[in-house]
Image 1 (cartoon, one colour):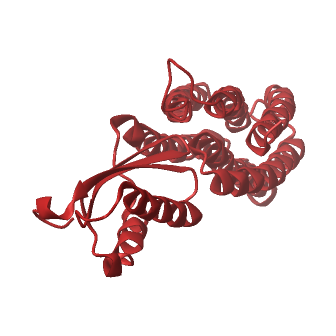
Image 2: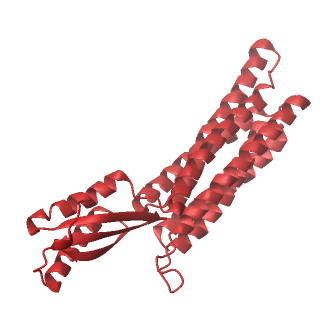
Image 3: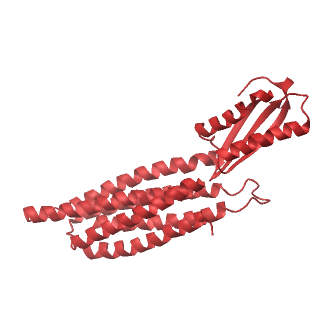
Length: 297
């Protein structure tokens, strides 16, 4: 089992645990903000399951039907997760407005606070692990899942603070302000909506074959530039990304008196140096004689 798959499985287990305890305490206490957190965790669980299968698929080797590999499964996963987060946020707002109109009281504030605190701690450590592996493997699916849990840390703490404020108003004024609970839930939903937008933008861009980041393109240009003493130039540098996989192709101009082997050796040297500096990259180089040079990239 790869590190990505094992980490995605960890997210499934942690979210399953949190859904159970949040749902039980939410209904026992009548807190819409806790119930909203249970809904959020349910979306997180579905997202974690999607991420789990997407990283398994993206790790598959290229085949006859998918000669460029299966990396875009991760981007599709990220887009689906963004939509799920958006739906969860709308549902939370709906429940919060309904709670404001119903003016329902909340019980078991202490237990609710404890569950939110546990949720924040669990998600903090799991999200850190997901982010770490996502950066190591350049996995958009794991990064999306980590973003879910990171927001869950903040939202759980926000709900916990709301419950504390309700308790404080009851303690000092002998009349708890239960309206604080749905207000906090709406604030949580706004944070979640912002999360869904960021995630959608990040996951959707590679589906349109957007170029690699400027810093990585600069690395490629620098590597080729270091070969100037061998009288070479390049043009038509193109790049794209699919999940964690990166693809680059370019036209390399070499002196016309070079043999096929000499040109091939230069291409190999360039490819190996770029691969040592940028992970998960595949490079295709088209060689042209120096006389055809028109402009530099």
